[in-house]
Structure formats: structure tokens, C-alpha cells
Image: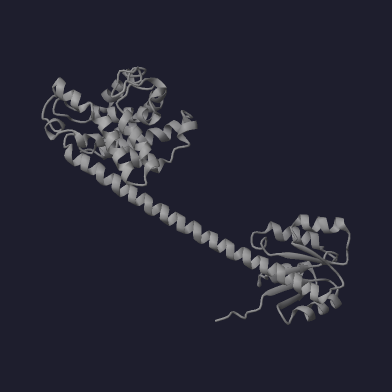
Length: 360
């Protein structure tokens, strides 16, 4: 059904003859509200929001320039298009009015056909702008929904795979869940401490935390006899276990070849492939050292080792939180990035609380 509802125009002029003439010209096409002052305009705006305002400049009390300034300063009215209607016809007057935010400048006396056409054009532009804004908002909403759907899909894939790793590795229990919590807390404090913030502020923490769950995904390729051995590993078995970072990278690369999650999985590869590297170059699988180890790997190393220390293993009893923190500190500059350990010491009590809350 066609909408025949007339658009609303407020005509503001202290000259009664101008109000009468303007209303006569416009009333056939629009609902016209004839107002004799700017004060009456603002009083009327409390009840009716027009599609356009025709505003005289020279009025007693508040003039048109002052009225427009107030309109543009108020969020309720700032988007209402305003056309100045005035007997002034100098370029400077027109420039001043447009500079304040008016969309047009019409001189009196009115030329009826020209007045109608210019109003029609401006209202059409406003309608097109509103339609474009609505379309843009709908598009933004759709993109957000699709992005959330993709993130949910990523989350489901990663979480299910991480759960599968935990299910196979009965020794480490809820290790993946705890390391994710440690990672989040340590990263938050690093940003607060202004440590590596140039890099950390570029991170998408949703992606980082989600992808961190795959840091041990390479254990999928390790046999159950080694993964769940009820005792200390032999040297040969240990060497096989030490292949899990590279195996993790290979698993993730296979995922990259079959999904559209390449950017997302790039973070997962960094966690999987470098969380056993050491600051002094004695780690594995590549013997990286210092800043050659990606920050993801350096931070995960702290979280991963801490959790291994406070957890029971077939070959050892769990260390206390205090003992684990001391061992982490003793590894400063050898195992761990020194810049991370000062911040770790600020959150070690939070690590201890996480370990208790998410205990096996």
C-alpha cells in the first residue's frame, strides 16, 4: 500500500505575510507548521519532529543563526535539515549560514515553483540518505552475525579438537583449560605494565585465546603408550614426545588446507610450534632463542611450564604454587623471557587461584 502521509515542514518567520504566503504555497504538498519565532520553534519541537525547517534569519529575540546553532548542538534535532529563507542576498551571509550547517539558502520573496522544487530535492536527498543508512546498518548487522557465526564455528572446531587431545592425554587433565586462563591473565597484566604493548594491542584476544587451545594438538600423533605412560619416559620416548610441537604445526597446516581459517590458524601454529623453545636457545624443536621466539610462544612457555609444575605426573608429585613460582623465576634468562617474569610475579597468586579453581 502506498504511503500518502505528508511530510512535515516548519516555517519560522516573524513576518505574518511571509508565513501566510509560505503556508499557501506548501500546504498542498506538505503538513506546514507556521511559527512566528525561534522560541516557538523550540517549544513546538518538543511535540513534533519535522522533516525540514525553513528558517528566517532576521527575527527579534533569537535570530536564525542562533537558532541553527542550538539545533545542531542538540542530538535530538541535529539531523533535521534546515534551509535559511531570508531577504539577505549577500555571499557572506550565505556562506555564514551554510557554515553553521544549513543545507540551502533561499531569498525572499518566494518564487513558488523554485521553492517547491528545492524543498522536494532536499527531502529526496534526505530520504535517500536515510535509506542508505538503513541499508548500511543492515549490512553491518549481517556482517556481525556472519562473523559471530564464523567465530562460533572456529570455537567449536578448536574446542572439540582440544577436548580430543585432553581425552587422549589422561595424564595432563584440564591442562589446556588452565593454560588458556593463565595466558589471558598474564597478557592482561603485560598490557597494564606496558610490556610488549606495541605487539599485544594488535592481538585479537578472542583469536589468541581460542587458538592457544591447540598448543598441544601435536600430541594427537604421539602413541598412547608414550602419552599415558605410568612412569618416567626413556630417552628414546622423550625424543618422540619432543616431536609434538612440530607434529602440531603439521596438523594445523592440514587444517589450513581444508578450511578458510588460515589467519586464525596462523596463531595456533605459533603456539603449537614454539611453546617449548627456550630463551637461551636450548629448547625444541628448532632451538630458537631470544626474540626469535614469537611472543605467543614465549608467553605460553610460562603458562605451560607453570601448569606442568603444579600438576601431578606419574613420575613426580605436584609442586606447590610457591615452589612453581620459584622455579619459573630461576629460569629467567635461560628458559624464559626476562621481561615476562616481572609481570608473572604480579599475577602468580592469580595463577595459583586458577590452578585451584580448574583443578583436575
